[in-house]
Image 1 (cartoon, rainbow, N blue to C red):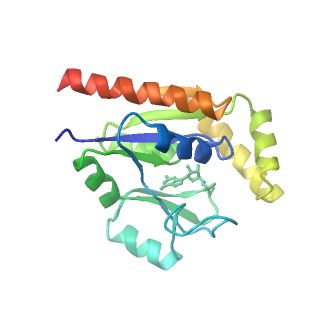
Image 2: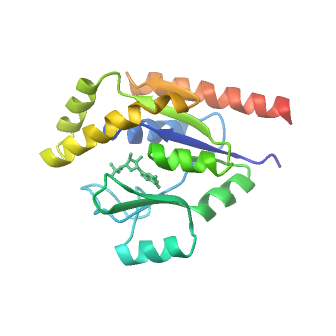
Length: 195
Ligand code: 5GP
């Protein structure tokens, strides 16, 4: 069986990653599965444990981290909330021929890349900071302080987008998903050509 591949999607908070990912999982031309990350932050309204994230206590997260269970993990937004990708989810998926999708931040993505996993790296770009700020305000789930911090982090992430294989401006979900499907289909063909 042909092994799968790691696909990373990053982009600033509020760019629309979750919506794109949801649709992409239904339309992907390759057997794509989502790696559900663990986090120590509280669930937002509508989020389900085990589906959106695995919500862990600080103690449990630290235990998993110390046991080397994460492929990568980090404190996002410098506020004490940790996020991490479970090693077994990724390695099992890839060995079963699946393309495992990681929706993670830029530092996490670069850590996976540095570790020699050759992920296919895709960055979702909001187009402008104004568009991003509107989106964050419209979702009504973050405090002013949190929005300010997310915008600060966004500026920093966007400045590293050139390190990705593909940068896509997320104008409409349909168009973005179509572009990512093309990228996946091409990568699958390239894989065949190099096999
Ligand atoms: P949110 O709290 O808005 O769901 O996510 C905040 C940020 O954490 C997003 O940029 C998201 O991509 C990132 N993130 C989610 N899961 C992981 C993970 O497992 N590892 C890393 N490094 N970042 C993650």
